[in-house]
Image (cartoon, rainbow, N blue to C red; front, top):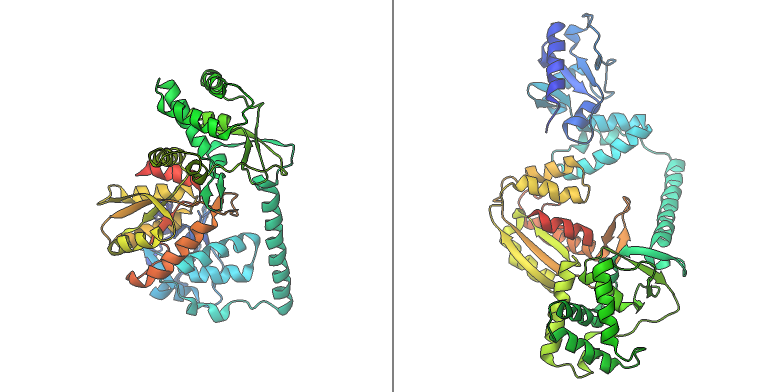
Length: 464
């Protein structure tokens, strides 16, 4: 817990000026929210012990004595005298957050509703929260209010689904040309939980060989084109070479979009996407035609068209490299609280998903800084991060980082507009459920962390 040191100094000077001991004062209201990290206070509201009621206090620009009693459950003297009703910091007393919750529940203004949401989350994450202090004294909503709230919740649910429907990439207008992340388009080439466009990888290998004056990738490309047949060009490799040099020198032409179907499966433009991947173009132009069908170029197509086992393995290895370079994976962090179960948890994960890499990091330097940076990616509020740091403090700073491949992440939109994989949500839920009983004094969310999407993976990989 922390509080603005300058504000405390100002308060101490104010109390001395008015000949009041800080032991006879309790800070109330938003100062407690500031203390526990939920939000900053704008002013300092205080209550003073009744023995000082006759004193005329001097005015101050942001320190104010509030009307007595501040709480409808306890007198101001009780707030000051009862150690169960306040939190101590540097000799100053702050009213407990439960009583702030109670007061806000009755006021129920817009800002109070926002604070209540945060306090509810704080209560879930804080083992010291005492609902018994206030539960029977909270306002009971009427039947009408409960009914109206249910209607409102149902409306919000359908409103969210409609918004998600129309902002989803696959529901773009047929004739719309949209710039989308190159790695997103690559990640969409999954059919029946398997990568369907190994021809992209062969094209990528051909570009690599072409620019390095090698033959292997070019030979693979020519072999693939011969097996495919039906090319519009007599010499497909020559035309591809011209495209490679043009993109290398001038970049990808966004006026020539890649044609995709309703699910963003490539219909036409695989050569251009391969160039975009190789030359690290961050975005590509796509145009959707819902009626067109994609071409099947899974690994089984290559198996059926005279590619050797060694060639297939090299193509798959290059796919893994391309996916890794484009951050098409999810990064898992197992926290120190489950260090004894790292291998067991990893096996549970491996039973469902392909593990791409795993690495232990022992005695992590700047562990708190790393944790803060990791959760900052997902815009987690500071007070929640501070609580995680506090609960992980007793453990040796050993973590395990695991990269996994999820063929069908099944993304949804969060309230903040960011994508999150439903598969990731389910995996985290299962691991926490399986292991929370094995963690002494378990605290919410100190077992596992997984990035919500590919962007999170890209950012988190850089941290460690």
